[in-house]
Amino acid sequence: MKPAESTVSPPSAESGEVGLVEPHDFHHRAPFTFDSGQTLPGFTLRYETYGQLNATRDNTVLICHALSGDHHCAGLHPGDRKPGWWNNIIGPGKAVDTRRFFVVCANVLGGCVGSTGPSSTNPETGRPYGVAFPFVTIRDMVRSQKLLLDHLGVVSLYATIGGSMGGMMVLQWGIEFPQFTRRMLAMATTARESAQAIAFNEVGRQAIMQDPAWNHGDYPRDGGPRVGLAIARMMAHITYLSDASMDRKFGRRKKETADRTAYTFDMQFEVESYLRHQGESFINRFDANSYLYITRALDHFDLAAAHGSLEQAFAAVEAETLVVGFTSDWLFPCEQNRAVTLALLRAGKRASYAELSMDLGHDSFLLESPQLYDLVRGFLERDQPYVFDFAI
Image 1 (tube, rainbow, N blue to C red):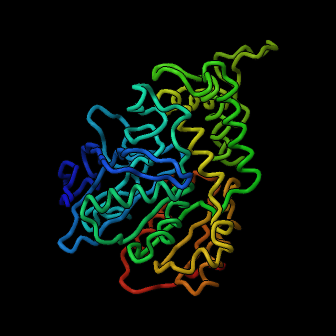
Image 2: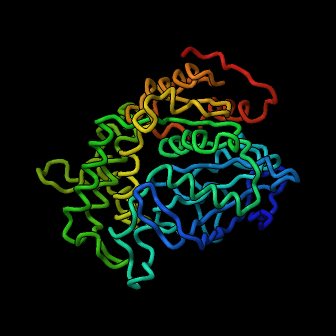
């Protein structure tokens, strides 16, 4: 068992930042069987850690990322201008305080940022797996990360935290490893996607698969369905925002370079420019086949169907849970987050629900929010169970 080590440069006491960070790769060299029954001879998970594992090896906070996220959730890589995707919440003195907690985040199995996924080399062919990669589920992602934590010497999770798909993983952790998982904090999530959410995912998948460059999933690493993937990202990104936030940020403002008298299909509005930028930046960091696999994993996540009811799904849970919903989230709306909390309470579990009034849409959990920081800090740092004063 390898002792866990910090992978950050020591920050200054005043900075609140974890400093420069470096990723590591965990290589699991034994066969791994997916829920589908398919097997890989082994796999790799890329991960980062911040802070130090304590002597009793029980101060770990696991961060679970969303669909388009990865292992790099805090600090800076050398040469980066932007820090990790949840840098605003992780660091010394921040809500997830790395002076107290050993924080771990891993790119999911099936991903494309260092972890084994469809773009990885199939040892039998010497080519990327493509659609020969096993179908992956949220449960597969969680089970693979448990092997990583065992490798790091973690004996229990102080807490697991995540939003959106990360929130699904949080719930699965409490179900799959109840004695290992002591606290769960799930944000902007659901116990199963609605038909509308599945429909959005399907439009994105069709944009990819109808791109001739997809070639049935067989494309070179430097090629593939870039147009289709960009469109999928543009469409999905709309669901992460809200009407109010888009109107405030863009309104109907036109690009300064736009011909205001011409009737053309050229880019004219600022919101068009923003979405095209989102699409272009996404195709430079994400694999199209991983997008297909992960969105399908989201579609198949259904705790009630898997266990008979949501209450039965949570029967084994031992963790204290906080679920956070956001009023402007129309992808995984508040009622879906409340349903998770109510099912936990009906199952006799310690659970609380907090609803934050924010107009930033589904992505609210990623953005600056002192209210959210206070909730996270309070949930992690108190020693005794506490019921938040929010209506369910």
